[in-house]
Image (cartoon, rainbow, N blue to C red; front, side):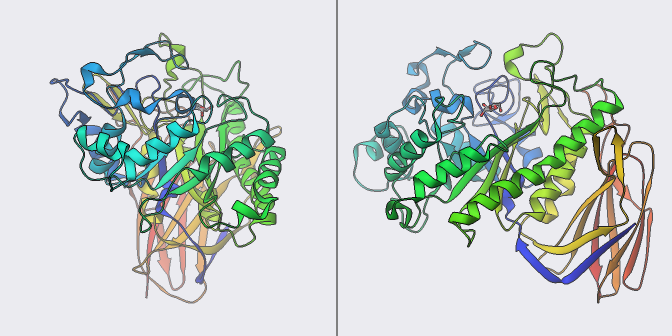
Length: 502
Ligand code: AHR
């Protein structure tokens, strides 16, 4: 098989946010996972777990979406500000019926993003909140003058406004965010976004409209029709900067998703087929967006994606706690390659969810932490952040799988960074056969190659007792000469090559 690369042909820029993450007040994502508050037993800075923050910095986390998800459309931000002892306690009705004490709120979120050094993405409440509530939250977070909300922020201990990079106007409003019709939400979007004011013209907030559930193209079309059929406000700068898309890989069915740890080859290949369906979803939505926005000014944000398996035994079903295997790593690797290939339109991706929920990069238990196979993929792909996508394609790849559940045996993407170093990410999804790939550059001779690998059986995963069953290691099964690099990949493996050119 050959991988052809035209190193002289840059296609689009890969925004760092493509490698973003999602956090929700759900199970042990915020509480216990990211935030431990006053807990003296677990090392923390201002309540944020040091081990988790350090691990996330190592994958260069670019953006963190918060506070949900479903939770966002029931979140009333004023419950989460002011003295902690006075904050309202309530039942988290969406997720597990546990007490939400609001000890993690707006101030804590911005403190977490400060420690992570990442951009902010706050999701507003359209489902059960008012325009006034949303507009006051934006004022509270970002206004630097004299106003009731700016004064309240200062009274609560934060003199300076924060920077809100992205603001989501609702979440899944076709479903859990209010069960709205597309036309109704489209009008709500027009209305609510008006009051997401840009107080600081130098740091405009990017407003995100709620897009479809995966391939529900009817929703995409109707929303855009409602939003753009009148000249105003559609012609106004900053009306819609982003359009969200959500897609989860559910291996069997929503009722019987299947185990995260024990699964058959059939289920493995079904996950692979469903993972690469992301390509169709992006293409389908992009086609409609391009009717309204041919210049691709509206970014597509796949701000919830990942595998959704059955919860681990003896855990709260509402906590969505699942293990994470080499299969999840392959889903992540293929998905991120697809995002790179669509980086002309896809400007953000948020894996659901960052810690302890769904396809997490990190799992915690009390003071213990383990990095999942998916974490290692994000680490191996970090070189793509802020690089330029290069023109590349595979020749001679073959289909692998069982029955209808087939996909290309190898998937890839290639970028070039500011120093002219190529990053090639390759995944051999075939669990039985190795893959030999000859990589051909068009013009440049190869000077040096460095490799990293993640490999294992499809069901391999890490535990608190055995945290290194699946881990990133140096990769050396390659040779290079002239313009060509020859690589041999193990079955079920992921490889990153960093190629310096002469
Ligand atoms: O990530 C879990 C849930 O999935 C989110 O809260 C919701 O937006 C989606 O349905």
